[in-house]
Length: 260
Image 1 (cartoon, rainbow, N blue to C red):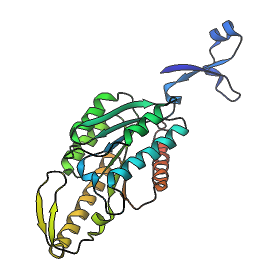
Image 2: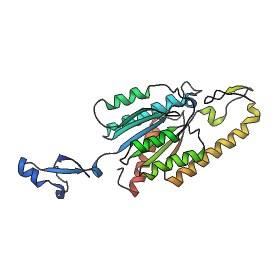
Image 3: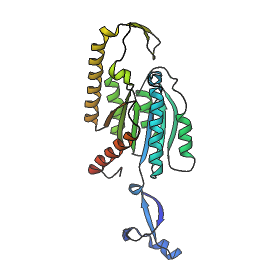
Image 4: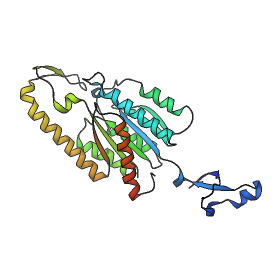
């Protein structure tokens, strides 16, 4: 699909020279096509209330927003078009994928907003992104994935069916990973405001089993759908996400040139 012209450089394929334009301007120009343009990436960031949990000086939402900002900055600097969709039970912010002056700053401003939603409903926001984005690209989902596996599989499967590549960063606070609670107490469910009395000594084993089962199910789902999957403890250095993204793009590139 033709998009624009660019000036000829030594080594360019002469088949794409526009001789009519040369006759008018006495300059060599190459036709640039859609397959030659850089990556279009959308950052899908969960801002539901469960993401507002943290035990190490910052929350999952703050870590997730910073992770999204890091990826946006990296992709923009290498010439890729970056878009953003933040959500809880519905879409909160949407910015189309662009690479132009001022766009990165607009993304950063949108990512500064605190998580304030209620429940996590991935189905509606992810359906919305399918409706909004018609050109194939890369979708990067950043979430704690507090959603049923069947809902996740249906929503993510719809995105993959549209030809988008996908990467999933599964965020967990260290206390969620290791269940570092010692005292019996009332705990509040952050997504429905219900109080639950929990004895950690009794609940720990069952919790760890369910967490492992959920992560295993998510990993199998991602393998089935061809989605790159990374579990991110929020103590993990952010720069490692860049390595994960680059590695995933190299693996995709072996089978397809669309995202290279």
